[in-house]
Length: 470
Ligand code: UDX
Ligand code: UDX
Ligand code: ADP
Image 1 (cartoon, rainbow, N blue to C red):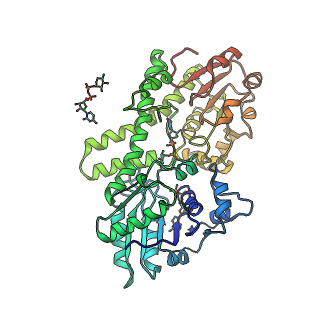
Image 2 (tube, helix red, strand yellow):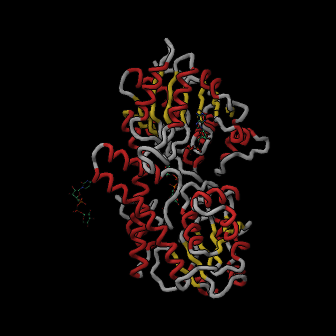
Image 3 (cartoon, helix red, strand yellow):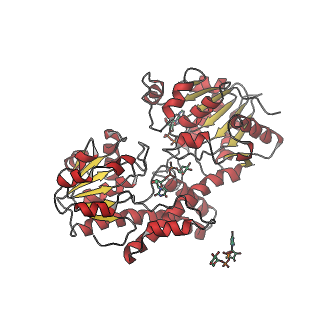
């Protein structure tokens, strides 16, 4: 029969493990949830008395306030949490490999493997082990082999795949009312029982018809496929935005018109300076790598193009800035508003803002950056990584970090909007204009400003996907 889950351990207290298991604890007061991580500073932040949590996510603090100390715990004692749990989520990082076989495409599964080996090494009793990190297909199979080869007598491990579909910035909303929960298991009696055990945890707040149960490999592939198709929509709309700019059509009108087709639907069709985030690019590259390993080069080429279009969109936007500023930005001053990869998060992984700033720096412009959530240290780290040949001291001579949008725009020739933060909609453009060098330019990479209102003030305005002359 399925196990009654009463203790859950989550390995990895990051963007996925933290919010996911905090919500499980919030919704299941009868289950004790312990989230563990090797990173002491991260765990200290989760435990901080003033709730300065390591990640910014609307609504997260309230959930943690409610459950922490009741049935939600954060700890660095990984072994103890593994030993006590009936069910273990593996939610560690799986970055794209930087070297070795598959470098630049394949996922680095080292962290998953280490966590799996740790479970095998310390567990005294049977466990349900749930793969939560986004991983390439068949990882569950590898985890199963490692666990079976290393388990003590009498210990059984059932492996499930339970990919997470939350989006950053809306993680808590998404977790409280998910479109669906997907659980993959072996189609054996044991596998199906383990699946039911986890489904019963979600049944505490997710309607039954939204909990989908499938085979292990379908579950793993569905996660990659969902992200690839979402990213593909953005690359499609961004490809059309280039046509709009060249012809005088308006991408907003085009997206609106096509979104009315119920087969297409209106969501996720906002043209932008390019998609970012830790998942889209990584998961597509995973899919490309998988396709190539399966000797399906045409399939690989098809998906690779989605990433290439995204790179093109970012560099096309940088080029528009340079071209519009009379073909040179050397020595010019540019404010970049927003550094996170989307609004309502402090996360900068693969943020298009990083590429823009790198391009401006390589043209020897001066850049001032403002973001309401991203830590200063993170910006320096990202820029150092983006410009590996330039010493940080040199970068710091060209880049300033401002503490408000208004400050960032002072004495600039141009303002570039890179993230769609709500507060940028409320900027007092009259005062921005007064303090800028003239002619003053605004480049809107997020379709956020009222271009006509800005032009009335005196700005020269370029919005992504609009064909009007500046
Ligand atoms: C994504 C998936 O949405 C989520 O289901 C999965 O679990 C993880 O990856 P996330 O990366 O957090 O979530 O955010 P998302 O809202 O999908 O945005 C990704 C990027 O696409 C952002 O840079 C965003 O600005 C961009 N985007 C999104 C657009 O440019 N246009 C759109 O219409 C939507
Ligand atoms: C299409 C558009 O749907 C319609 O809006 C436009 O005005 C004309 O082009 P049509 O070509 O008549 O219409 O049929 P459609 O139902 O779109 O199918 C086109 C092809 O796609 C068919 O061969 C169909 O078998 C195939 N198809 C459709 C699939 O292979 N899978 C699907 O899920 C849907
Ligand atoms: P994600 O966005 O997938 O959640 P993060 O990088 O935010 O990724 O979080 C992953 C977390 O997993 C990190 O805090 C990292 O320290 C932790 N981690 C990685 N390997 C292990 C391990 N073997 N044991 C415990 N924690 C781990």
